[in-house]
Length: 385
Image (cartoon, rainbow, N blue to C red; front, side, top):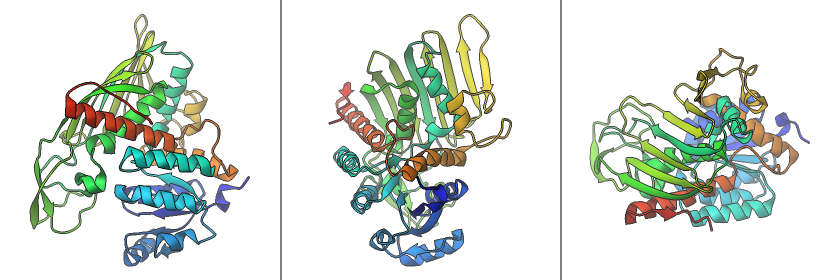
């Protein structure tokens, strides 16, 4: 088995998320061989900014570099499918940002290709890797909540509140047919399925676009940028700003989630409550070191993240001692530690806790059902074929 420091990894994209990937890889001791950007000029500039040894001129050049054993794909959504397909064909392990593809047919193909290749394949549903979420997943499997009956919550942000807010994700041909659900709702759905061990069977969805026309800047805009462009053009928006979804889970549990990218003051609030037959848990990503545990016949509890107080899986995901707050960027290091244990072994483990391509396809299949339900106004079953 290799040591992590002997593994060479390249990263495609160096924007907000790509930079988080690079920093997390360095933190866990994986060698970043270089990056690929939209142009050689941008790549050279960003490689210099980030202190990387190399900027690749093309994906082909990246894949003939024998030092590269794994590739992280953090490019715009429409590039995920063709890039991942080429990377797998070249025999490299892959970590891909969500969504895995723009359609469920594409994601199904990538699952099949990855399975036949025997390569490590992961989708970066990093929110699983907050230590308290790893702790909760083990609590549920140990029966500490009893039978799961109800799963509720939200994922609210405000970065697209104004009609002058713009990002490539607003355009369906680049970001996908679903925007709020695909971009952030997929995180909530993946996380709660991971925590409960339950799969969504059917959905009833209401999608709304409150800002039907936005003003696109004449020049480029960075994700989460507060800048307002002086020159804009009106663009009709065909993707949803908000969603309300009822959920039926296999086995009889029920749920609901509200998703919004227009909720003033909510910068990145993913919250859930899981109600079991004996106890409940609740968590919010804006207060990630605190877990509420509810009881009927004894006082409720508040568990503050501490490796000394969590179960073994929660403690293993923690990067810092109790009282030292862990946040978003820390989850990447925890997730990649699990992924690179498998890369070092040369193959996926039997039951990885990180999200595989199968989990990425799961979210695409749920998305199809959400779109169908919104169109028909009826319940829609999730078709995973």
